[in-house]
Image 1: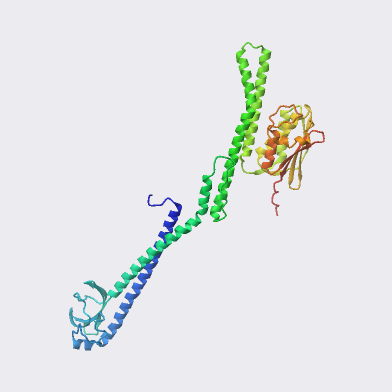
Image 2 (image 1 turned 90 degrees about the vertical axis):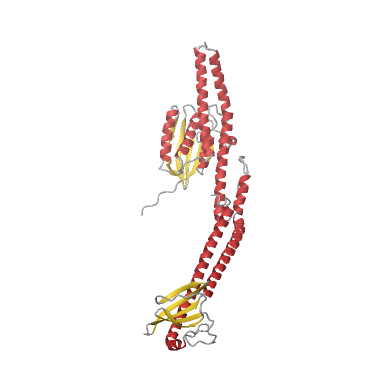
Length: 458
């Protein structure tokens, strides 16, 4: 709707001003109504008291007859003063036979029944009370001009209207100034958001301490911004790594295809070698893409919720599959009690598979791989050792980086295996340590915090 302002500051100001206007107006009208009701009740009470006095002085009133407009200072009938805008009349058979007091400027009708009534005419309002006069069958009517009460009611309503408008104006101005202070943190967030660019190293939103709701919004937006930047950085890194690492195998694959296309009569032996080279490059590309995708998901923290993972069962299954992938290698898994950690089943399985494959590829062709699962206090360790040449101490830290291969190895690989294990260890709040095993080969130890045990049954 066009009547609703678009700015939050204007909306708050309009809403508060409207609320104050309604509250002040209703409260003022209730007070005015109570005052007016009290004034009119007082008039009725005074008329009733005067009626009792007139009942006592009825004989004198009847003897003196009509003295309306008398200039006497004191009236003996009902305590009525001449000029007090009060009137008493005695009515017999629908005729006024006597009256005393101030006569209204408009003709007064003869009341048909007893009780209170209100008469209006010529800009004046009178209150009337009619009662039987003794046992004579006559009636007495007392009237009082209530024009001052009507003026007071009008004046009070005008005061309420003026106070309401003043309160609305003061409230609007005060709210406009206060909301400027209250919304200043939001303005800071807006200014900070406008300064943010696609650069992953750009500034974050300004930190806001109060009010609490805006501070929570600031923290939530900064967390979301960090997540987006992490995802963007992971995407850029994935694109750069994929472009860099896939260039060589794709070039080799293209050259082999071109050779086969140009030489349709290539001898069978050479054709077989070319096709085998193509299959090798295809496996390399597939393995590389799989590793890069896993790294990108980890970099972007695109992870499901943590669940309890039985490491004993996971290692047993992983070793069985690794033995089928590398039938010449002997995998030896030491028995262990059930150990549970909080984490992601797929991520831990990826780390274990890479450790087992890495040990098989870089150990002896018909060698052995030792796997051990142990728990020390709140730390769980997965140890995988091979009988290969190992990694020199000065190269072990660098081997955790992506696309890094040891100087002593000639086995095929993408250089992502240990990088994937390192990433999964960090995502599970653990560490990866590379050292020398009892057989002289590489010994990789992944340390993870253990999951809390179940509550005891009492």
